[in-house]
Amino acid sequence: MKLTELNIKNYINEGDNININKIKAINLHNKQISSININTNIFTNLEYLNLCENNIIDTTFLEELNSLYYLDLRKNPILNYKGFEKKRTFGYLALSEDKYFLDNFISHFKRFNIGIFLIENKTEANIYKMFNQNNPSKYLVLFLLNIYDKLI
Image (cartoon, rainbow, N blue to C red):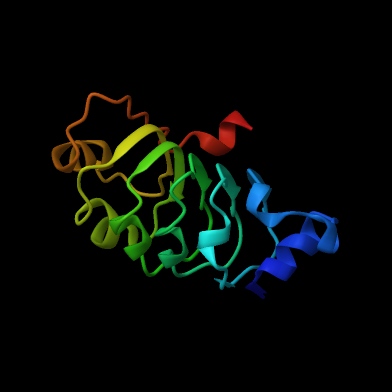
């Protein structure tokens, strides 16, 4: 399913009565979303976005979400990480490691400022070392590797 402004209004059960510019949090966990086709200029106040367990392959929708602080993209088959070229600051970022993750995210993107960085790790690669080499920062970077599902 393609995510649009109309879908978002339907998900939050407000229909046309909601001012979409004022939305600060959207939880679309496990909604079978495959692509996101929204005008990000109208989501100027969006701070929290949970898209865990969908079918998202492209992150370009992130480029203009300047207020976004919390992002959960775990368990999505992401192929295109280009949205992270412009959006590099997060209080919380959650991703899953897959075959494209190391080549397309960790090794290419630099100068991130992330408070908590959660990665669901399926291999024994030294992601922490790789990420910190590319992103020396005074900010806290926390990796929870191989234990996330045990915590819940």
